[in-house]
Each structure stands twice: as C-alpha cells, then as structure tokens.
Image (cartoon, rainbow, N blue to C red; front, side):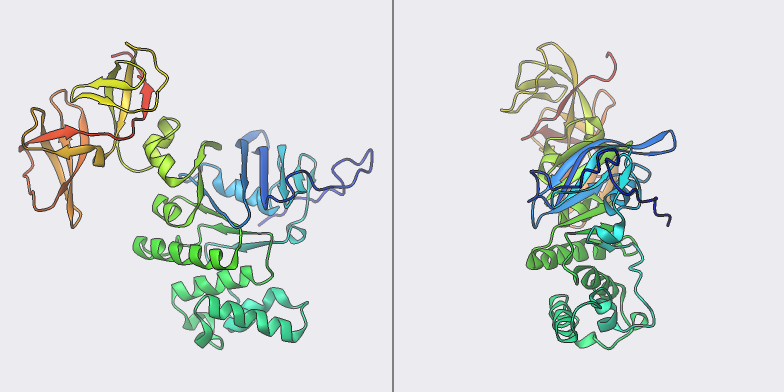
Length: 374
C-alpha cells in the first residue's frame, strides 16, 4: 500500500495554520471531493457528512470508486479537488494530505490483519502502548466484554473462528477511541447469511460504544443491516445519499433503481402529476413525480408491488419460478412481452407456462422519463 507524500502546509505562501471549521462537531465532512489517478478521475464531486455516533455506508459495484474514496478519507490517497475534515480539522485538500497516523482514525480491513504471534488481548492492546498499564488493561477488558470474547483473551488468531477474528479486529480498531472507524469490506470473506448477522452485531457494538463509522461494501443487505445512511456510488459519483428505505422506495435515478433491490421498469404514460397509466392500469402516488401529462415514462415495479390475484382481469405467464421458503419469486411475462417479478406465498405453486392473475399495487412510485421513444 503506497502512502502519498505529505505536504507540510495547505497554504505555504502565507503559513496559515490548519484550523477547525464551523463543522467541528461533525466526525466527518466530505465536500466536493475528486480523486484522480493521473489524468483519470476515479471519484467525482462527492459531498456528505456524518453525525456523531452515526454509521454511514459507501455502497456500489466493484470498480465504482468506493474504496478509493475510503482511502482518501484515511489519508492513503490525495484529493485533486474539494476537502475532507475530521471533527472540523482539515485533513485533505489539493496539495495537502495529513498523514494517516495523524488523523486519529481506526481501520478494519477485509482480511482483519491480526498479528498471528499475539494473543487476543495483545492484539487489542496494540494501539494502546502509550497508556499506563492499568488503563491499558482496563480498556482491553472493557472491549473484550463488549465484543463477547472475555473467555478468549489468551487465544491466538488461528484458534478463532472467522466471526471471532472479525470481533477482535473491530475491538483493536476501537481501542484508542478514534475520531471515526473506517471499515473496508470487513465481511467479504464470509457467506451471505453470516455477513448480515455480523453486520447487525457490529452495528450494536458501535452503538453501545457511541462510535461513528463508515463502511464500504458491495452488499446491499449488509448495508441495510448496519448503516443509518447509505451513499450509492456508480462511476465515481454518489447518485443518492439516504436511508435504506428511501433508496429502495424513492430512488433518485435509474442507476439507484437498478442497483438497489430487484425490479423492472414498466412502460407508462403520465396521466397527471401523481398518476401514471400502465398496461396493468393506473397507479397513483401522493407525491408529485414532476413529469408533464402525456409524457412517455417508465415506472419502477418491485416484486412486492405485484400481487397475485385470481380475480384480476390482468394475467401474465409464468416464465421462471424460484423457491424462497415462505414465498415463490415468479418471473412473469405480460401481454406486451415485458417481464416483471412477483412474490407469491409458496402454497400457491404455479408451473412455468401457466397463466395467473395479477394486480399492480404500488405504494411508492418511482417514475422516470422514457429512455427511448416508444
């Protein structure tokens, strides 16, 4: 890992010191940040803030720039535009990068990076060497109890499960009480069910410690389980910053609509500022969508918006069927040829090729102008 050169002062011509801004109460403030590799922009015009004790998440596909942005927050990448502040202190802007070790941050990596020759207690205590021994011992004891590993203090990393190693890495990063905790895909080596479970556990631990954190992941269920606010990143840009609920039900653009959850865009015609007409009838939302009447559009339809209804005049053909335990996820082909998804209780078992009745009931409409003329 290459650390960029650290410049001595952001304004050497005046010798002006780095001072706290008006956002000194914000654990993290990212303002109009760009990060480039040579002439190639990787992160573009990113702005967001975290409140004390909150957990944020940078969510996006591989190669979208989320890890590069986290590295810039940590001090491992310089910014080419904008600025980053931690507790009001300027730590990055063009021509200035405060060294990572001076930012008072904690980091949890994908591979946990535990020291194999140190036991659990010694791993946690690694960043506390400047404390007097009684304080160091007390802090390690607090964290061992917090992460539920009081009985494993003398064990070594190779004697621990993956979940236990993850808790040790978390406790070690939290031990010095950093300004903010940065986590880079910390659950990526685990199976999907364990990832979601650990994400909830880590959220509880951070909340109990009152620690601010930011997570990088490509897994939206992990993000939903852990984060208060999520930034969906694509092509180096934050498309939307909000709660998991708002990302799912009120996506800001097509990228967010396609990346978060499952769904399809159904052709529609705008009837008025709250209603659109589809081949399955009119659907309405009390929130205006901003498109002019008569505009050709597309409306996002989630599997839970499509209801199985034997009495409905609208039918569709079963194309695929996936068993989900309590439900089947059906892929259905409408009369127009458009395919939609529908969740149906699993005691309603329909064969591929069968016609079933469906009804559209969308409580939240995400309407976008048609991508191409019909």
